[in-house]
Length: 178
Image 1 (cartoon, rainbow, N blue to C red):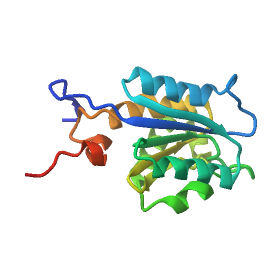
Image 2 (image 1 turned 90 degrees about the vertical axis):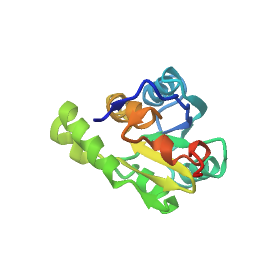
Image 3 (image 1 turned 180 degrees about the horizontal axis):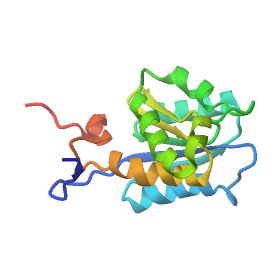
Image 4 (image 1 turned 180 degrees about the vertical axis):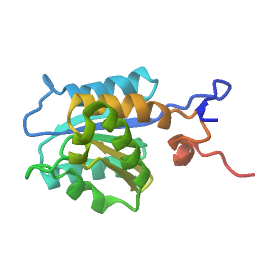
């Protein structure tokens, strides 16, 4: 049965949040702010929270720096996943992946269907692994970030979630085989 097993220890993840927007700054970044706040409230370590423009080089540079850092387990991005000419997050990040997490998009769209209806089709939410870092990319709306955190990340990022969670795939948290 899928659930949080309270008998197991909680292992905090090291999470970085990237807001991708030409219009957001620290005073109005409600989406990135929500993700950062939820990460800290859940007991994780917020390693960084940065805002970059909708620019392939800026996005890729920041994500690559985090992937190259042993201090970051998870990157969560918000913004740039739609279909406007400025929405470049998939084009910037997907080339970094060594593996894609196809199920994330499916689950995100299932959750999103319940809140925004068929409009979920206009999202290119995706996830994957670059190096040993897991990257999750969600739309820029605060509602989409709330949906993603409350219905997916809260469980997927909790090491106590059974039958498994992303923590079991984080190299520093893996139990050595004896």
